[in-house]
Length: 439
Image (tube, rainbow, N blue to C red):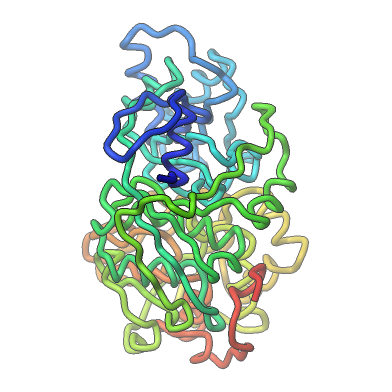
């Protein structure tokens, strides 16, 4: 019997010849990360337990990205605590204002994740890195504290659900739409403590940015992780990355064996998926964007760890270039990293978004978790390219968040209500994943 990607990674990390779903393993950690919300709790536990040194300063990443630049005294205190801990333990992978990025965009960009890695993060969207064929999952702050000390983590080997995306997606349909459609099919607990392996012709054609988006939202289906097998797209992305401060090689090229056992296999016709929106208050509450034109909005947020990469901003600019944001709508752009900002400035993307009436932020999670830089008031509605739309997620409990792709978000910013690109007069050839994809 063959093995899945997850089984191969965890067997290697545990020093075993093979593992099976349900096995409890003690796995070696290749990268452990935390942010300004979760790291201070972990640091307190680390020091309370009497630890005096971290297992490997090059394999820990601390990224204050949620409430930075510091929005208040409490946020400043949290960031100071992390900064001093990083200096004290000579942690190399530490970034803050002026160099910081949203962690799940920044760390792959910096070359810190390789195929076959075991990555744990004190943030639920750590599953993003599965786009690079890594086993990446979120943990609690106490687990992160233990990993900082020992470099190992206890895990139960998950079953794997194989999602096969057939066909050629239509114009303006990308990874966000496919994943929202998938979560709508299986529910927010449809992959509970299971790995979601994403494959098929549509994934093969998808850009690495689209794959990051899909793996990022695996947690919204309850999954332990989301993964895409290693292929030429993975190789091309890694080739452009720096070696990283860990001095890593290119990682291990992994795919599931042809005779691997999957707990389920779900086929999805990507050509039938429309631009999709998740309505309040669950990512699984999905509907075609075209059916929601009667929903007027107050704000649009484009960015976050889900859709804050250059491709995402280019897709928004494709629609907004030469147009104006609706007078009743506030458009906020949250780029993933400083490099994304520089690249967006160099190719005219930033100019198009600002001239249309968008406000560019420094890289930060900001309003995604109701933090700052765009919090909603009672009764307000926002279309957002973020990953969650729970009650009060972006501010007041009486506000509403509608999750969508950059294309739908940009079209909605123009229209003043939920809209598709076609509704605002955009014309494009069928097929493809937009800017950066491979039609």
